[in-house]
Length: 333
Image 1: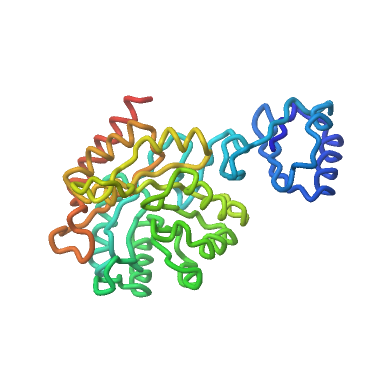
Image 2: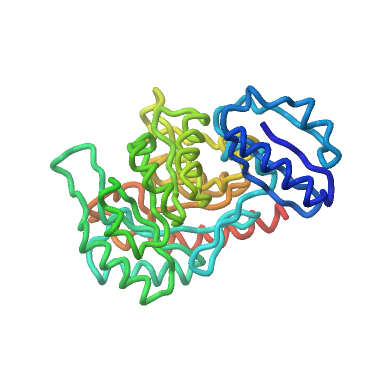
């Protein structure tokens, strides 16, 4: 249920309403805008009399919300969420570029790529330390050493870091990481999501390979309900019958998720296509569709990458793409 208050509501009456709702064990999430305040009511609201609340002088309207995701719902939070991290922001009309290798392989590699993508316009460095792989025999990442090298790259460039966490037990290892990425395979790892809800670190939540928009938003709800408002939704392609591309990139998710939710939406064209030649086109399409950011795999030597080389573009290709992306957003504005 949401309660929309009139402009400049009487503070005493509003406090009386909040106290009354608290007595009914209803959790209230207020959103204060320039001209309107919205109260998001979470809990068993079946016993709350809509007519009684509507009759209050300070109340403009009351609506029941049918969707099971409350905190992630745009009805509860009409304005876009903007997440600030390391001197950059994600959401609010900006196009944030996150770039870097699928996996950290050496100090020279990660620092070199970090410097190159920063010079091209990236404001977040992505890189895998722990790698969830389909095969147990594939390269699993440098793990703790990979985190150490990512921190060295941040020290060298100033770029905030985004890297994947696989289990709640790993949280102490990620204490100095700026953005915690939850991969598609862990989107419904609810114990991990609950643990991330207790932190205040931004979480990049990737959509599962066979999950609906509501599934994704319900996973985001776990983090938000835990008290962490810093959730970024990420589309990385879904599994369909098509085999030419690694996955099928669902760009309709951008306007759809923005209609349903206030959370930023980031697109991963690298995992979505699995083909480096397709990454620039899909990145430009995502920018044109209104994405809040892109997370792109960049490797200095893709043919010899230890992980996902076929979908990685070179630093030179990323620099060219970044220029085109700026032109697309400028044209839209």
